[in-house]
Structures are given as structure tokens and as C-alpha cells.
Image (tube, rainbow, N blue to C red; front, side, top):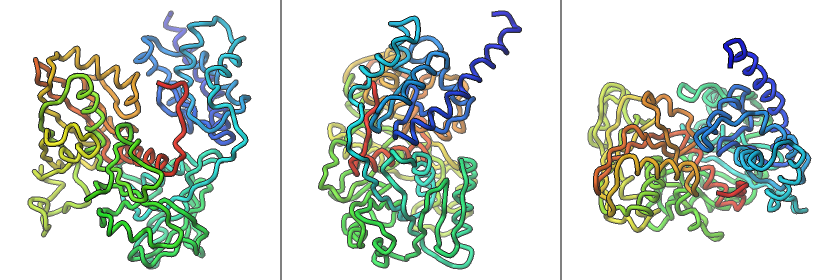
Length: 478
């Protein structure tokens, strides 16, 4: 291509992406169908982001996918009578253009490929969700649920329970949702209903309920019924404590955003979500670190066998630590988080066994808290049952990240320049850093990045959907 044609080609692609964006929005709002491209959502994506996602197709097919090739499929999706689902137009476009040279067969192709999603007469029943707590995870869950909101998405954020209620509290809560030092500005509009103590975010009416304990709340007073209560406070982690939520009128189930104790099922979505039964009323979404490492460990164990290992977590500081030196009941955690690397313990390695029982007793773990506000890394030093080398191991993990049932849980980067801030906003629980992989004979060391806030929150939403029976399929399947 001549130098003068690069700008022309870019503007052509940009025009096509601009025309696709409102169609993607209509498909989602009218049908509840989320359009993705090789696993990356296109809903609410900016024009430039749509173009960037198309370039990522090179990782999957070996060549860039032009928006010109996906647009006819997106246009045809709008006319099809589809039930709520996720449709991967990247995979579909790749399949279609391998078999066709024009757009004449697009509709017939889609009707066949998406036959399992042809609409039935059943209506989507909304399911109420309440967030108990409004900290880092609570606010990110709010953002995600608002982003997904629409006629076809059944999880409705109805209320948020917080302590307080003093003058100005509502405005402060709105401000914390609107502005985030790590994740940036809220994508939309937030209004405050002072009289009714509510937030209206992108048209979603969210009631603020002020209470100091679950026993003070009657959700039916707000028209909330059979709700999923997502406890993101971490105050209660056992059945007795979390069971307080179930005593509240209007509550139906409880999801904990921390490791559960006792007989509570700890779920790492993508690995053991099938354990969630229709009768389960209290479930844990485990921890951010457990979610980051378990899918990768499952992939390794399936192919090579994991005999033993140690997981060292380099973790961003959290609100549990002190900003400056002060008393703390935990060893070392009282020292300034902003000034020190703080060696501490983690239960993530042993917690893996709750999601992956075959690794019980095989892993140890420690953690180092470091002076960064978000994004962490797990260093997995493992002894395998079968020998391998760096290239073979990376090729296998790349395939797992692109074409497997764990593709939504494992991301993979080969960049020589990636640093922690590049992972902020990743929707994957873990990202394998291929350049750092070490493998010799039966020993390997893997470096796994993870956004311990946003990536984990995405996993929590998946668990919420599974618990409420509204997890929609992605077509075509893996």
C-alpha cells in the first residue's frame, strides 16, 4: 500500500465501524443479544475500540479481520428473531468468508449457525439484585450491571445497602461511582433523587438503603422480591453470618465476594460453576487470586499434571492496610502500604483445592503487598508430571486462551513491554505473561497478571448469572 492510501483506508474502516456501533446497541437493547468479537464485547464500545478489537483477530485467525466483513453479519442479526445470547461475529465472519465470496448467503448462514438461539415465545423474567456494601468491588459490580442493563438482560440492580445516612452521604456515594482514580470516569450519567434516597444511573433506578446490619432491612418495602444479595463487605464469610441476609424479607440467595468458610461452595467460574445447584442459597465467588490462578492450573493439570508447587502473589495494597504506620491486628499490615513491600499470608493457594480438588495439598502460597493501587501478579513455581519446554508450554496456553472452554478465563500476552498498568480494566481473571515463562523438564514458572478489582468483578457477575439461572450461551460454541 502506498503511503498516501493508509489514511484513506483508515477512514474507510472508521466509517464502517461508526455505522456498526448503533446496530450493535439496537441488537442488545431490543433483543438482549450481546455482540462480541473473539470474546471481546462490542456493546457500548467506542469506534476506535471496535477497530482495535478487529485487529486482535490476528491472534485467532492469523490475519486482521476487516470491519467490512463483519458489518453484513451485524446488519443481518438485527433482522433475526433471536433469544438472548452472546453472538461472536468474529468467529462467524471467519467461518463465513472462508466459504463465500459475497454477502448473498449471510442470512441463510446465520439462521443455520444460530439455530439454537431462534426466539421462543418465553419472556425474560427480571431477577432482582441487591449489593450489600459499596466499596471497590461493589462499585465495579454496579458499573458492570449498569453497562449490561437493557430489556434483554434479566439481572436488575434494585438496591445498594450501606451504613451511614448522614447529610451529604448520597452525594458522596454518587461521586465515588462517578469518578474512580484507577478505572476512570463512569461511562454515562448519574442523577441523585434526594427525596427518595436513590441514584439514577443511565436510567437505572437504584435505591440506597441505610442499615447497620442485615436484620434492619426489609426488601419488600422497596418492591424487591426473591433477590440475590451480593455481600461485598467481607464481614461475614460463614453460613451463620451470611445466613442473616436470608432472614430479610425479599431476599432469596446470597453470593459472597470473598473466600467462603466451612461448607460454603467456593466457585471459580469457568472451572467449577457446575457445582452451583438450584437449591444452593449461599455461594462464594472465592478470591481474586484464586480466580486468577485456578483456570491456568486446571489447564496445566489437564495436560501435564501438577505434582506440587508454590504460588507467590505480588498483590496491590488494599483498603485493609494502613496508609501510614498505625495499629493493625495483622502482622506487618500495620506498616504504611504506600511506602513498603509488605510480606503477608494468603489462603489462595490452598483455596484452589475447593474449586479443583485434585490439587488438594499440593500447593503452598505467600503474598507480598506492594505500593500500587491495582493489578497484581501470581508467580506459579510448579513441578509437573510430564516434561515440557517454554515454547511447547506457551503454545498450549495460547491455545487454551483462544480456543477452549477456559478462553473466557485465561488471557495471553506475548508483549515484551507489558507492565501492570496495561492490565487495568482486563475482563479476564488472569493473563499469562508468555515472555516470562520458564520451563525445563518437569519444572515450570508462570507469571500471571490480574486486575484484582475489575477482572475479579467480571467473574462475580458470571457467578451471579449462574446462580440466578440466566447465564446465556455464546454462539457459535467453542
